[in-house]
Image (tube, rainbow, N blue to C red; front, side, top):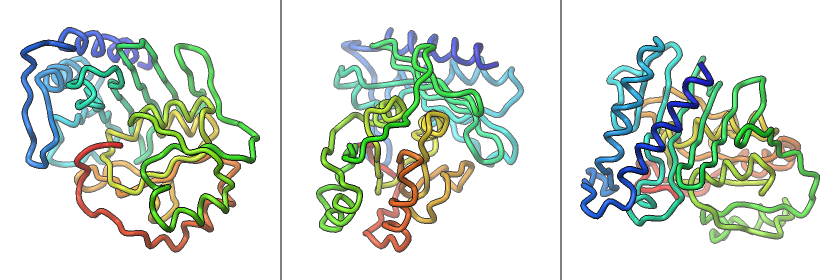
Length: 264
């Protein structure tokens, strides 16, 4: 199944490329103001048609099931980074993950412009284009990815306690993918996201030696929640848990209780 779905992710990416830079690309604005294109819908339909025969329910950002499955299910973002796609920037991807028992157990993040395929399966490791990747860095001067957290007044306590000496910018799902190969040590996201935004990145990070936990209870992100909504999360190297958890056990920073309008 893993090989079949990985091939489907590549085929979906190739389909996206037929719409990429299309001068008359059809763009629709959702109720929250975020964009969706004809490419989102076409790839969603393609993946549903080709993955439903595997016998596992399929949920995509563009087709959410009225009842959340209580068994295994696929959760898919057919075009993660729609605004990048519209802006003709290369930072968009096809995201596919298999959820079992409320946790991601297999995931694929494919970037069709660059040809980068990040893949992971529970107990079998994380891979970039077939080569195993890990994040078992030992650096004590930490690198963090920005989600705007370092601009908050309360962040200085975290930055000092963790000895964060560099805060880098990176696009959407690439934060999780590049962190899995060791490019950063910590990535907090305080705003909400959806489950299709995080599932493939979570299994990739977990198999690479990191953790992805809810900012509210410090437990691994779970899947199949109402409206498929995540509130906020922390990604970090597993060995940093004893330092990070005490900083967020009484988390009281202002929470955004609404769905995400965009991903940083």
